[in-house]
Amino acid sequence: MSFTPNKSSVAECADELSLSTLTGGYDKFNDILNFNPVQIIFDNQDTSKSVEISKNGTSTWKTFEAGEALVLDMRGNHGQADNFTFPRGTQFYGRGTAGAVTFKISYTYAEQL
Image (cartoon, rainbow, N blue to C red; front, side):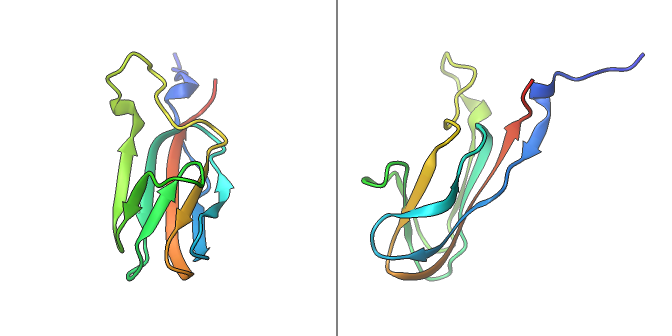
C-alpha cells in the first residue's frame, strides 16, 4: 500500500529575490513573490548599510541594520485564517544610502493541489 501525501503539505523552494543597487529612493527587488510563502527570510547581507523594506514603495515596514536577518514562519498564525501569508504577486522595495547593497529574500511555499 503506498501513501500519497496531500500536495499542500509538500514544501518547495522559490527563486530568491534580490536587491543589489540603492538609489536613495525606494528601489524594487528583482522579482515579485510568485507563490504564497509559508516561511520567508529577509536577509540584509550587507556589512555596512541599513536597508528599509517596503511593500508599497511609499512607507517603511521595517529597517534592517547591516547584517540583520528575520525569519517569518507564517504557519505560526493564531488568528482565524489558516492561510495567513503574503499574497502572490507582492513586490518588495528597499531604500537606503545610494550604492551597491546585498539584500536577499528567500522563501518556501506549499505545493499546490
